[in-house]
Length: 92
Image 1 (cartoon, one colour):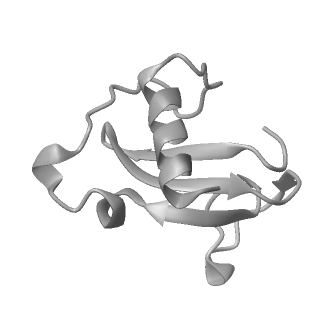
Image 2 (image 1 turned 180 degrees about the vertical axis):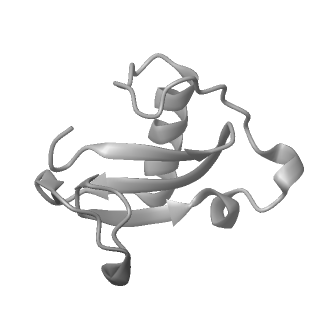
């Protein structure tokens, strides 16, 4: 993952959001709940959009079975095709 990459955020096998990576990898050695930090590995991202704002009828949402927390995207997959359609819709 690098700056400029698009990342599809999933929630329970449904698209949740599309973001673009804008920052370098960060690692925080100790969790700090008072700062709202519960994950030690992160990057800064810009929100492209929420899926529910793009496809407003939940019955039309695409179900994409995900088995990994994070994985490399192959362009010819259902996820890759969704990202390309979404980017074209938002012209990013």
